[in-house]
Image (cartoon, rainbow, N blue to C red; front, side):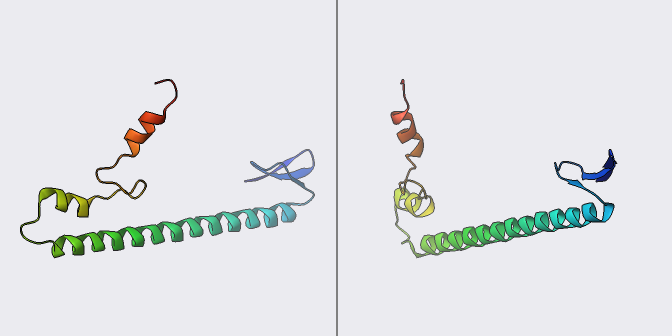
Amino acid sequence: MIFEKRGMWKISGQPQKYATYDEAYAALEKINAMALAVEDRRKAENDLKAAAKATADEERAKKLAQLAEDSTPYEKMIVKNICIICDMEPCECFTYTKKTDLGE
């Protein structure tokens, strides 16, 4: 939103002052263009993350299909749920955090 204050033009939420309405409008267009670029970048990053998750799920499904009929429940659990952070099954991230907390 552009408004006039004491003979100068301002954009709400911005500290800069502009001498004319046209200057303020041009600055507002630049701000909006940058915001759209940031939003587009975030969408692209989210799409990449979703694609990576989908491929990981497909790989996990392939591994499950390759397991033998007589596989133990533990072997199936290992194929299904290996933690990305600690690379352990079952995940030990929480246990490690609890052990290293101060004062406990």
